[in-house]
Image (cartoon, rainbow, N blue to C red; front, side, top):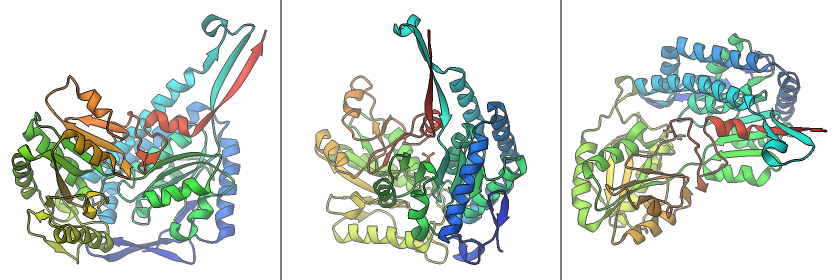
Amino acid sequence: MNYKTLINGAFVDAKEKLPVYNPSNNQIIAYVPNIHNENEINTIFENAHIAYLKFKDTPIKYRCDLLLKLADKLDEHKQELAQIISTEIAKGLKDSLIEVERSADYLRETVFEYQKLMQKPIIFDETVHHVKNKVATYYRIPVGVVLAICPFNYPINLLISKLAPALVSGNSLVYKPSTQGSLIGIRISELVHEVGFPKGVVNCLTTEARITGDLLVTNKYVKAISFTGGPKVGNHIAEITSKISLVLELGGKDPALVLDDADFELAANEIVKGAYGFSGQRCTAIKRVFVSHKNHDLLVNLINKKVDALTVGLPQQNPIITPLINSNSLKYNLSLVEDAIKKGAIVHQKIVYNEKNNLLHPLVIDNVTKEMRVAWEEPFGPILPIITYNSIQEAIDLINQSQYGLQACIFTTNYASIEQLALQIESGTININKSSSRGPDILPFFGVKDSGFGVQGIVDAILSMTTIKGIIINK
Ligand code: G3H
């Protein structure tokens, strides 16, 4: 089936197409336009800029109402939307439904937080700041055209978390969905169109970013970029752009540090949930476990039991482990396992996989050392390395040697001195006694080192897509 996509108020096709696959059987399920002509791309951004010039001056209530209507549309169509996600990226149907609901909530919370923000412009005057003879008021204003580049793993939620702050504050938006994720991207553009966003304010640009990416990110009308993807591309974007607002979320290698005084049952539960949910295809998945020699067997036995009980299957059956996004991902995960085994790791489960449907059964890779690739690389798959430490300092040093620093978890029953220890870990957020995660969406979400740049979360995303304008009344 051929899809058209929303560009400048109309649904357009392109001569060239991008195939979209069903990861559960490697069959092509659809073709979407591959918009790659330089002039055409430049015109899309120019029209988005023209649309912004009008949209920025629309009343706040008008924009909020449009977003609230879109939230209602997501609710109304949630079964259908979940079905598209599930087919296109092989996410369990129930989890896909949760993602749609989370996205509708995201829209409503964005409206709420934006209204709060706009009711309180920043004022400097004599009464508060001893600024004499003047009242300086700073308002938040939109920046212009926002470019959103979205990953496959949360094709609605990570789109909405970029779309909502951009539009509520009066920007226009060009979004590039991941090709596996473009059916839902296009469907959202249809709903956006139905609720009545003005022509050119929202554009869904399906394109092969490997070829056209530089054109997109360096377009002169783009004033903010929100990118979620890998560090190679993210760092490249940072290098070739300038003087724009940049928010990059670039993956992670989140550690779970299990201390000797941990509640091991709780730690094992959280680790398995955090490592294997959606087959480990989350930037915040737990991707390495640190445990002392003393408690290694206790923890690993608990983890193994829970891993062996994980359900594996196709998305319609709602298992925890579903097919990986494509055959390259399957091959990559297997290569990490093979490398680890060659260098002395022990895999506790039988290695079971199926190339026809990209299913890889979950694995616990034990006795992992720093010589193994799986100690450092991000698998985005259901494989979990266990690293044994001699001292907490050794564990912290190994944790901090990673190129990544998104989130981390510490498991302990001693809350008294935990902040001191947590502060030594180089990551955006440290979760105590819980697996790492982006939500609740109101919380700031950010990474350090190769995990990212800039801050997301409902309020911070609005801030990143707006700037300030001051009016100073002199008396
Ligand atoms: O994959 C990256 C997502 O931002 C992670 O979100 O923690 O809600 O799974 P999550």
